[in-house]
Picture 1: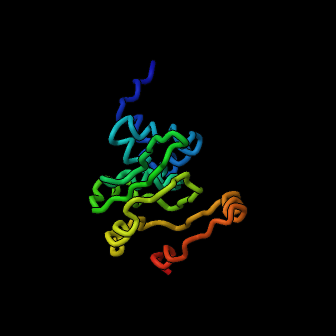
Picture 2: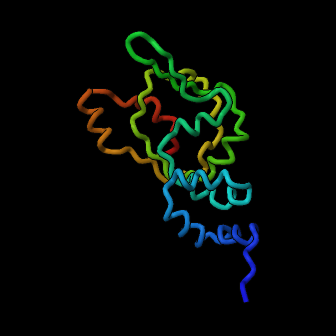
Picture 3: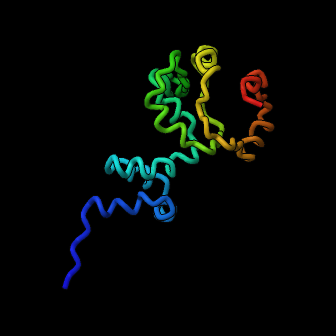
Length: 163
């Protein structure tokens, strides 16, 4: 006697068990996990924390706030890249993903300018944007590039970080 085919709902129940979801998602590439979140709402919420646990593109987070993101300007010599930071905080979309971020890797971004940095800082001083952040990583290969090109880290920005 043949077993009945599992229903669509039953097939998704496995992702409701965090240990099994972790095993399944751990075997897939990050982009495949991200694609899985687009299948259905139930699957989205089941694996959201796994997909967003570690982020290496802070521009993706900024682009979730209306008015924020990367803007490319074409010129005759080379493109000019600006990270536009939002001036107001509509965090409705951002707050879906941000609480799941535990690790943030900050690679050197090829950005020529930041638009609205001071305005963004003044809006976010009283807001915990990444409430569950446990670690920030700075890859050493990029630190070596900074040292070779004699670029300096702006320590004025560091005073806004909690100690």
